[in-house]
Length: 300
Image (cartoon, rainbow, N blue to C red):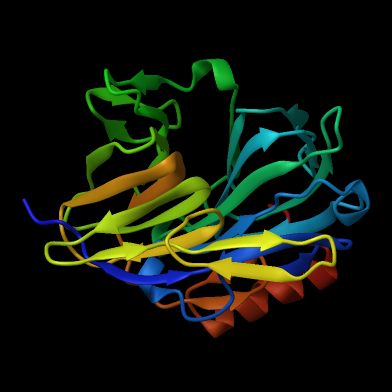
């Protein structure tokens, strides 16, 4: 077994999307080959309704899958095919846009105005770019959770892990998507197959991810009342950890424990032609999609 070294640790950057939603982007709309088959990852944590209430009005998707995981508040959604619903705390939506869909997502805070969730984009291989759209709406109650004797908890959104399988099925990139909590002071080793790219998004607590001869403190970002950002080393909240090759990840939890998403997938290694939420393989395919948006033939 070989422990994956940490390739980089970065704080997600403040970004505005939709109709004015303030969020943090861990990666996306740039060089994303190190994350292949994943294209974009957003953390939309916020406790100010005025910073998220305008939401993400109608917009197109083609050639990708979008994965929304809600931790607090709710996200109302609807699309051009007549699907609609609401995601609450612990719920997951895995949407395969395929040949094309028009979609909207409108976040709502909980009783205290808090909204927290993540959205991940996974690329589709060329053979499935124009597949029929579909939804997998996953209620929190159907997401299996493994609880270890030492207090470690792992929710399995997608993929096989420790003898159990998450409820999301039939995803092209064969990803594994885990929500992991390791209690204070505990050390845990988690498998990530050699052929996969993998990253962790730390969103609670602190800790270090260890390599064979070195360990890396992950970064935290904390907003002050004045809106300033304080960055501290050796803690973990809101940090993206990109791993190098290996077949396992080892984490040592800090004094508060550590909670993170551990995501991995098999790279597609295909060319990308990208314009916003439309991701194709060639510029000709991308231009065709944009033309279809303009002439009303985008939805198949």
